[in-house]
Length: 135
Image (tube, rainbow, N blue to C red; front, side, top):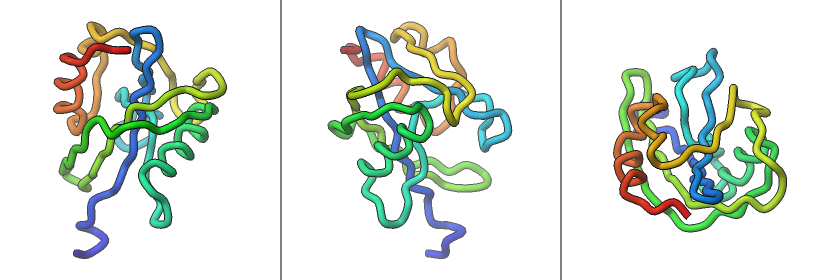
């Protein structure tokens, strides 16, 4: 498979606190800019998804997390690229999330999920989250 057709591997964190879930807004000048997402990013060739996620969340939000169980895996094709997303339930170990390399962060309840616009790739995950009891 050529590099142009190879999916981009992405790891994303589902960080829960007191019945709320952390979301982050993509920078306006990025792919899918302005949409809300779950913190994380692209996996480097020498990383596991878990290592990628710990690094990306530290860079994006300035916090340390522990990566827990895999919650959902999604493959999605956009016009310009394909992505393979792995969403992990994570725990905040140190720090308070702040928008270091994203436009904004918010803690939201399950009923608020529909109030924010997420990338098309997150549709199946969002359906699963609506049926999930937020810890």
